[in-house]
Image (cartoon, each protein chain N blue to C red):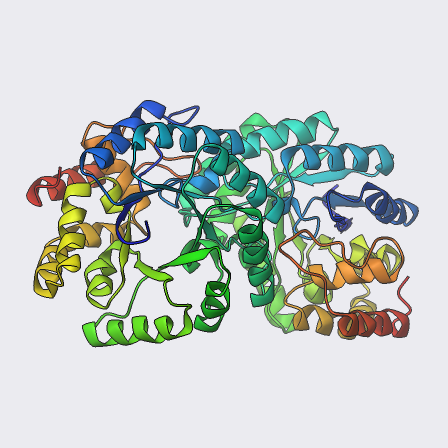
Length: 297
Length: 297
């Protein structure tokens, strides 16, 4: 399940709770598009803002809707105890894999992160994907640590936060990392603006936020990558530059994707967990124009 | 209560749960030393690693032990909903004030942090202290934002993370901030190595981690500051340089203070919440030597 398009849906939040109806509509689009897998409760899935109970309900709902599409559940938390409880809940809900970030409050040392992954992989009976996301977790994985972690039997993939800006440098970066890894552990690109570069550089999977809302468009890109049609991958992802520009403008993808889900009528345009606030009406109108111009649906 | 020595005790964690006996021993020292207030469940109090239930129990226990010493409870969390529940719990336990950091997962904008403080101060019936700790929360307050926040009726103090290294620059920094604040809102220094500089620069309170374990020593410093004996403040805090060196070496105070609590026999030397790991036996022996050389008790 750690290849192709792994779509990361938003978890919309209403004033008081998770918007299960909106979430179901979003997941239904992923099922219809036959994405290769789903990564629920990722960063855009707002795991960090939800209670254990809410996360359990969303995992259960995703599995009910996903049919035979594998579901990976993020079990990120600050404390190891909380992570183990979340892993139990995710597995009880039927998760096919766990996504594990190194969320820090006090800064973490490499040996602490290694011990965390050792504990979780020993505890869990499903495979684990390393979630390398320094922008939100404030922990930076070295390639050496990725290598050590990939030696753990349960570790099967790494979600990396991006690649350098040129095709040559991106290929070099993916190669250097791959040489550290146990064979069979896949490398997945995230940071949607890097998807084309990452896939052309040899990443086997796209852990995709915009694929969580616009799966048809994202699937065209991963299918072109699977066919090794580098030019088409580049053309399709370059075409989406106005979307990447919105992500940059709004400090990441979540506020844009939440607004876009509202523009599509799947949720309210105010569907972010507080303290996050929705974008302004003007910004939402800009997003609607980009969606329309790019014919995203 | 937002003046003098506010002692921030460690919450020791055993293999499976909070070590209430160890916590009680630590708090008993603060009561015996007659600290001016306590700040429980701060960063060294490991709030970020504990469940809502654990935080409720620790707040209740602290109030039982504190007698007439005011207790401030940190209610930090990523989501606003969680913070409001924690505020309710803290108030039900008898908290005299709340300490509120801007914990970020997705990066926060100033207007989001303002709305958070507005919501919490409106919800709470006890005063709130702003917890400015960019090293763990990854949100940086501007002086302008501190000024806006200080206009909220419930805000009564700001815990700042440090001051520049020279007495002149420190005084200038505290003055610049003070000019932004509503009169009566106090400024508290934290980052123990800056305590002498901060107090001499006009901070009215020391939010003190080492005061949470060594209250007698910390109280000498705040009493010298209250007597405006700048030279004695400087001498007493400079004397502690070997302790500050340990904090720097181990990436902050928590690992050192946890080991020190073990050295004093108050807790096990392994009393950090996982994924944090205890320091090595050699490092703990170094810490024991510094405690002995400085005659800390």
